[in-house]
Image (tube, rainbow, N blue to C red; front, side, top):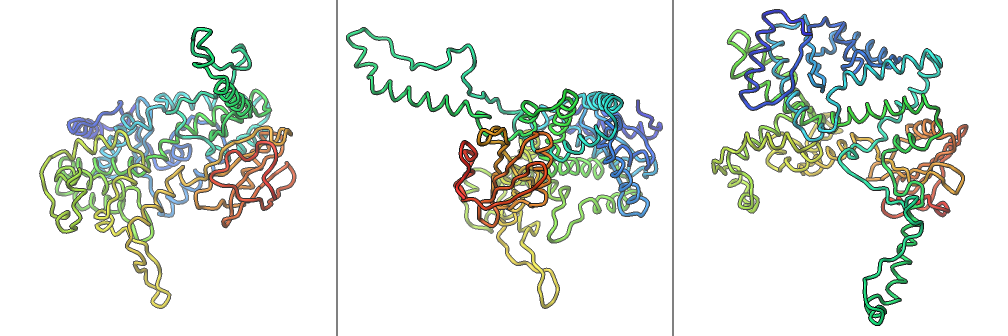
Length: 509
């Protein structure tokens, strides 16, 4: 349980009650008081000190420890999406910092509980990851540390090959299942014998039967349709040993648990900053602490041209939304107004701002948040311009004021966490048991070195050659790895996303 001092426990209760008075709703929050070394250790494990052993966690611990020792960084807060939520306070922080962290944490915990994108995450992940750690340790005792660790290395290099939207979508695989009659027959409309040929024309029935046969043939493909959850496909079909299947399933479960955090980074941090700012400035900070608080708060929101601070972007957007809805700057009349000065002075009090930001917190993720709420006025106020360095003066200058370019760059970086979208289209390519994948090219080329490393990991799990179709500088390219040699060859660029490529013959060279 919590080991807070009486003073900190009183501050926790005060911050908790204030947060609830504003309408925040969260699970019980357990604060743990730790030294900086303990906090670095917990952070290196992603907030879960009971996770499985792996060299990567040790490497992250060393990096965090050296960064703290050299004064380059400091962890102020660490909070876990769980029921109850766990949060860690650094023992050496000042009372002002502890207040700020507590208020910030309650904002995060409200977001975890109420944002729709976290609705399918396990609320007992602390127990789940402890269980994962125990199972991995048993496999290490049974098969050897190096063998299991090498397999973990491969799986961790592929843990972004999931479909973060799949928990919200029910998909039927569309296959003709065994015991369902094999070949399907066209259903006829019941009619008297003398009317049958008019109500059920033979030509129509023949055409419908042909379409059903074509559909059944497509459904016999493997997989029935392109699948974005590559880890699930490997879990179901790769020739893995039982312990390897279990570890792959565990790593996939963890990847889906952490995915919503990547999908809502800007919103989550912005929401927490919004509430710590309100609670601190209006309730928790006294006159003697205001300078210290402002120094810490301004450091959190600091930014510079060419970089996006998620804390700054998130809180400014929430404040802008609240102000717009308080002043009636929404709806058809406002959108129809094309006079910039009238729009800027627009004030039809509705006082719907607080209600609106709670609704936004509930249903949006970063992509939809940025796409809908970055407006020309917001971009102008926040100086969201395209910057470039003047070759003569060496100074950063505004190159373009079109906010849509910055907005599109943000959306490109946020879509799928900035990772390429890869789909499995054929698990039996050219009837040789080889794996064929397609990159959904959206304007950004793959980093070929990373792509080849990904193919190497996939080949280790699949056990047969793997191929990846992509595009480079506008030209089609096929990357392959057979277990010993990587190859790259030009292919005819297919139209669209080319998700049907790989069925049967390869694309023409």
